[in-house]
Image 1 (cartoon, rainbow, N blue to C red):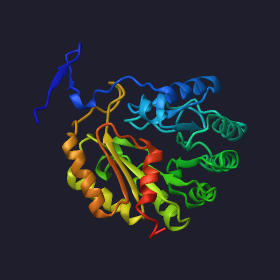
Image 2 (cartoon, rainbow, N blue to C red):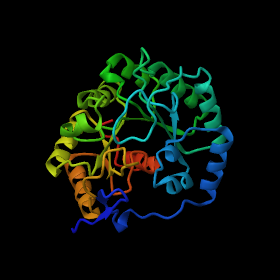
Image 3 (cartoon, rainbow, N blue to C red):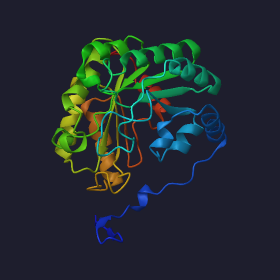
Image 4 (cartoon, one colour):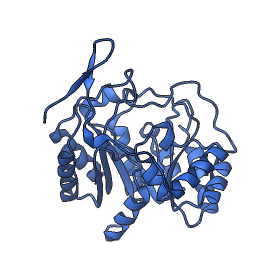
Length: 303
């Protein structure tokens, strides 16, 4: 594939986005309803803050991703557009507020995530557990996916969240080990594997992870990460194209062709994942309710 480059006004070059990354404007009745509710209740959604390309499709199918524990992070990962610093104490009313709002929105499936809170003694684990518990009490028909940070690999605090029994425990590995220092300088590959291992092998929760591609990883490295994830018992995997939020963030090294994503899908299934979503526009919470449903349809032999 020919690599096309464009020039910025300052003379620097950058990769031109290929045609397969173009998307239409979001719409649909359910999308409009949820957008109105988000604005009315002043919810912090990753769908909007991360400018997710799938917001229209997911919201129209009744799936949303909320972010708790504030809108600023204690880390400064070089791929992420969430602000760093200016950390406020967790809001004590947030678990109740999130639960009551989700009950009003009547979603089929909600993904709850958070910023990293390395400034807190428990990394935010108690707040996480209370939020999941309150949501389950108020939204008995809704499935909950907890997309958690790594808690610095601390088994006690990972376990605290798992005890609240989300329907899926997700944690994104994000990239291959050789790129961790560049991409996630305050994270550790081993911490991420620990989260998934504890959730699956100590609490028997279905687990899920995600990889961003196009940062300079090799196909062999992607395969090795898949095997590491499977060794923890992880059963759901998503793979998508990294898109740089701004010139201040890591640049895209390569736009992965859809055919390569199709090959990664086949590889993931052949290695043993029970469900794989792989494509340029796929994100970790992409059609999460459908992912969970298809995962369950495979059968629960191992669960």
